[in-house]
Length: 246
Image 1 (tube, rainbow, N blue to C red):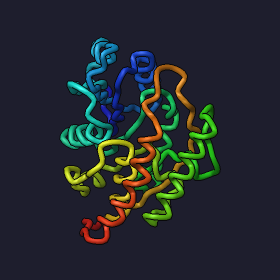
Image 2 (image 1 turned 90 degrees about the vertical axis):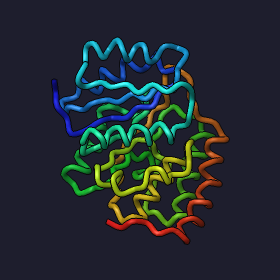
Image 3 (image 1 turned 180 degrees about the horizontal axis):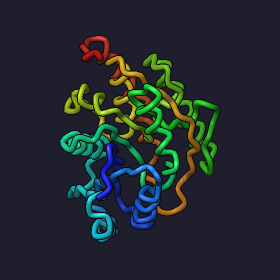
């Protein structure tokens, strides 16, 4: 068994073309990470591939299976609770499709473990626009959505919608995970905003985001719409809500 203080949570739906490669890429890193796959009933057999790999990595690879698509937010909340029960000190969010480069994981880890961050974000926009192979319309939508969220919430974060993150354990212990409202893309904003309002230190680590090569994207304009309109609800909610302070 290779022990680790860190776990990577990867939600999946129909990722059979990517899942084995992303798992092996993570386990090939010098820094040891454990991996938790949360599969929402993928009909393409994603979970079966993970189960097969568990025979090779029995103490490092874990699987939670859910019967159907239940939302990105609920997947991560389930993963957070699972991770807290097992005493991991650093808990990551990551996509399965290689848009998030596994080689950046140690940099996010270092930002929290050695450089004082409570939340480390793999940021596409902190040093410009570091996105590869996205259509220009999608780049503009994502970039200006992040700027919009920053203006409305007041968070000093350039990539407010990023989904590549590392949390120190104490962040997830402080946040009332059952009170997180959003299930979809706006979940990423709500988690950052809640951590910010609690007084945690959020740092951005520049990364290059590469559009998936294999499989089908789950992103669409309605998901961005949820983020744009949901942030107004978040801001109004924050005016009347007491956030626990660090």
